[in-house]
Length: 436
Image (cartoon, rainbow, N blue to C red; front, side):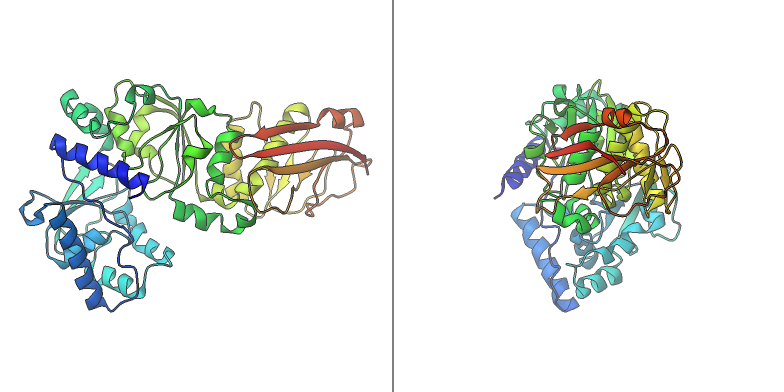
C-alpha cells in the first residue's frame, strides 16, 4: 500500500472509532476498460459488493447513503443505481446540477471507454437523473433544476461553523496527524485543481517542464508568499509533489474537505489562491482576500514570467506605457489582474494585435532555452534602446525588450535586473545590450 493509502487507512480507522460514519475507499477509475455493458454492469456490482462485504458494511441496513456528484468516475453512484439502492446526491459545487457541467465533462476523459459512457448515461448516474436518487442536495444559492427527480434540499457549507464544539472536535479527531493550531495561524492558502485537468491544460508547455506542479509553484513565487506562511489543500485526485517543492509549508491531507476549516477556532486566511476550483465558496467567510485564476492561468502560464518582468521594469520606468502582445486577450487580462495585485503600482496595457511603438511604449517577447525541464530554467531578456520613436517594432519572437522614444541609455542601464523564482527553480536575467 502506498504512503497515501496508509494515511487514508488511518483516517478511516479514526472515523470508525469515533462512530462518525464509515468511509470505504475504492479505485475511482474502476471499470473504465472496454467491455460489453452487461459484463461491465455485473463487474461493477461484484466489485462494490465484495468491497462492502470486506468492510463489514451492510448497505441495505444503512439509514441513508450520500454521494458527492464528483463526475463520470463516480462508479459508486452507478453501483447504487444498478442495484436499486436509494441514495441522496450532494452537489459538488454551486450550480453543478442546473448547468450539467459534469454531464458534459465525461467527454474530457480519454481513458473512459464507450461502454462505460453508455452505461453511465443510460443509468442516469452523473447527476442523479434516475428513480433511485431520492434527494438532491444543492449548495446554498444554487439554481434549482426542477427536471431532476426526488426531494430538494439546500446545504450551506458555512453553517459548519455553527456546530457544537463537541461535534467539531469529534470530526477533527479523524485527522490525528494534523496540527490544527498551526493551521489556524497560516496567512495564505493555495487550492490547486486536479492533476488530470492541469496536465491537459499545460500539455503544450510540456517540453519546458519536468513537473506538472509548475503553474502553482510559479503562482506562489510571483506572489512572493513565504513558504512557511503557506498552507496547501491538495486536490483529492491529485498526486503533485507539493511536499518536495514546498517543504516548509503545511500540506493538508488530501482527504480533508476544505469545508472542515470551518470547524477550526479562530481560523483566518489572509489570502486564498485558487486555480479553477469552487473551493472559495465553501470558506468565503474565513477569507480576507480571494485571488481566483481560471484555466487561462494554466493555458498561458509560460507567458507569465515576461509579464511579471514588465511589471518590475514599470516600477523603474514609471513614465512609460507598457504593451504586451498576446493572441488571447481576455485570458491575459485576468492574469495581469492577478499579477498587478502583487506588484506595487502595477499596471499593464494588453493588446491583441500588432502595434507601432510610440514614444512611451514597450513590447516584449521571451526566449526560452530549449531544455527538457522547468527546474533551473534561465529566462533571458535583452533591453535594446531604439534611436527613433517612429520605427515600428513587432512582437516577432525575439528575446528583446525594446525601449523606444526619449528613454536614455542611462535609464535603460538602470532597468537591468535579475530575480529568482525559488520554488520553480527559475532565474530571470534582464540586461541592457545597447542601441539599434
